[in-house]
Length: 426
Ligand code: GUN
Ligand code: FE
Image 1 (cartoon, rainbow, N blue to C red):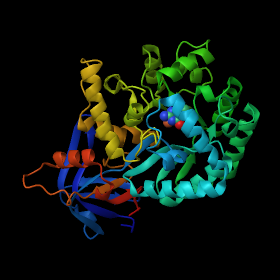
Image 2: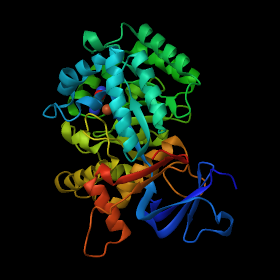
Image 3: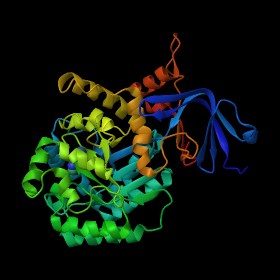
Image 4: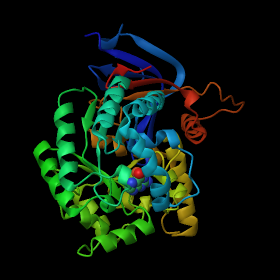
């Protein structure tokens, strides 16, 4: 038995399936070499005597995966929320992201972001930086220190930005991307690069062609935005008259999923049938960002349909379209908007359940990172301890009810422990 073997004791909850929660009260969750050895009602003989953190009945859940957020947008979150997507990008977001040319500013802002990510219930995340190479490397350095496992992308944008936030040419954007990849290669344990063409309106065909070559050469995953908002979708139609639907604007360059190109597409609010079929065929991950879709008047994604059709769906905070990095809040928001969708848009698509949003926040998104998001033996030991002692109640509550309260109240102060691949973060 080596010293990296230990147990957590408490009320252990994880998804057995998208619709079923596994609950073990007074259970032991055992970690061996960074990996779960399973959940036990009694500590098995061979684990007798290992260190055990007794949480006194706290809930222990898998770490949460944030499939989509923008680190440089964290410090202006919760401002400009009266705007729709394209106006918000042009008047708030692009000018703010321009600031990250200044490394002093980037350090101040990204330090605040990294600190708050560390304290959150998030253990894995796929993050957009900005187009700036030095700032992106600084973000990677800071996120490495948090111990969270993250994918971080230097953003590519060579058209339709303001003069302060647009790369000089497709060639310059591609060169900067290679510089960034070469400079950071082998530097990190916890951080990996992800190719990040911002969205079709920001990237010329020439740039996409070059990025596709880089994707293949460096075997990179890809993240971008898809079918988020009516104004954006109409713009893509104008920009790409040769495509039948938005997803083809990525697919024509070979950057839309498939075995050699793991891909996350954020939003997917207004995907036509053919686009959904292609996402399914290619195993594209949908990052469902419910709060952002409300804030930016984008709409309500048909998540019930995605789940029914067997697409990969995870949750994204989409900072700063969304205002909080809390994935507990993202779970609650996803249930709420799904109820509005059912009531106002399509009553054949029943609302999402707690079990379903919990699954999306854990294994749904986690599986993009490998065996992540479950406590079944063999999964990476990512765990979060939720203490609800400050939420007293005279009546009895089941573990599921306690979990639901913690999700809906989504208060950071209830997060009292976190582990990533067996490493204690706090
Ligand atoms: N589409 C292109 N860029 C962005 C962004 O920063 N946020 C959101 N929500 N959508 C985008
Ligand atoms: Fe986004």
